[in-house]
Image 1 (cartoon, rainbow, N blue to C red):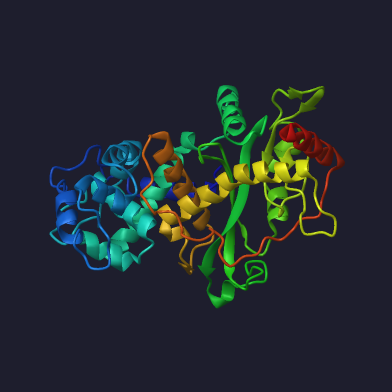
Image 2 (cartoon, rainbow, N blue to C red):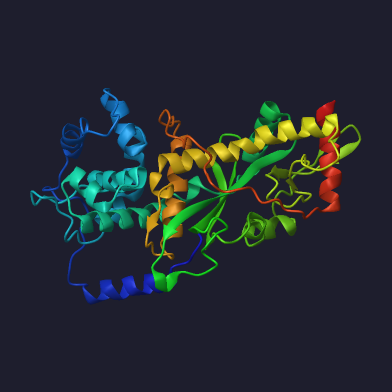
Length: 394
């Protein structure tokens, strides 16, 4: 879900086009655009010290841009109209040629994938820092609008597939997803610092909450809120929470289990409240030992919940801009960057691409942060968890 509406920005753009209405827009790419960008980029960067570039050119392409050439072409087709519909003033390389759509997309993907500075990315493509900045932001705006269909709550048929996936792999009947959250680090100007943005580890950060399906595809996200919030509070600020509480989400058919019924739910860690639609594990650090059925539940639950952990590790490992410290980000634009990376993550899965080997973060996606336990327990949630534990033991 897109975190912010940008109505005021749209008005500014409209005024800008009215002011310059005598300038004819570019309906197609100019003949002088650079079309051999990949050969030039590969020749220049494939042997650069510090990179472990595969010798195979197709794999090398995925190493630099995270997607196959086929998916790269698909992404270009999504944003092409937006990238060529404005006067391309300033978008030239050092040889004075206009940048093709393909090279613009490559620049943006490389910036997001590597997390390297705009200067470094520009040097790899033979363009300036300002061009990298302009191209990347245009790409983000375009993909945010054109790829929305790659991140939405599943329809009825898709939900049935997800439930079959969770039950088949983890024994969790009627489970519709796994939830987790992560911190996106920032360095803020002194005038923008506040206790809200400073989290429990004394870092300035923004939170990203995500729900994933059985294939680690994001089906709901929420971002834009300060890292000083707990995961349980973040959840309660989300539209997903409100919809689920009001019976507008996770409201599909129940599943009968030996005389009991189980409604739809998602699984989450102990940082979340135990609700009738959100299953958390039994506590194991108390004085009372848990039963065999409760231990079995925790094992199955943990395996299902691990999907969200892995998805965040893949997201932040593939799009390294999210795992590095953002230098003085525009806090209004950062949610769009995060959303774009989630869209690209889903496109890789939807297109049948494989993630690059070893691309996931080697450690936990929220390394350095301790899981804060939430003590909130809904009696109906406790009852449903006990029913699930009894079923899983059998």
